Image (cartoon, rainbow, N blue to C red):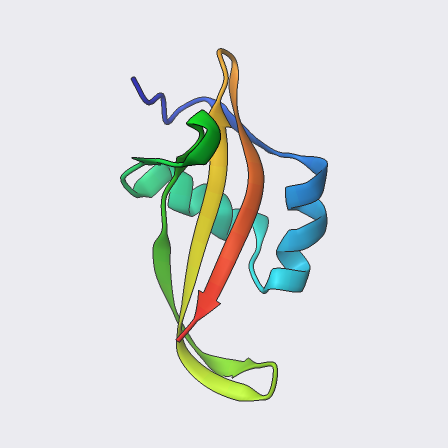
Length: 88
C-alpha cells in the first residue's frame, strides 16, 4: 500500500536533471504526495500533476507544465528515479 508520509529522496540522476527539465524538487514532492500513483515500467510507480505555467520555455510560451516523476517505494523511503516534464 502506498505510504505517502515516507521521506522522498531524489536519486543522483533525478536531482541532476530536474533543473534542466524545468521543474523543482518541491513540485516533484508535491506531485507524489498529492496525486494518484500508477504502475510504471520495471515495477516502479508514476504520477503526474499539472501546474499553471504561463511562461516561456525554450522560446515558446506554454500555459501548463506537467510534472511526471518515476519512483520506487522502498521500505523506508520513496526514491525518485527520474522526472519527465511536459509543456503544453
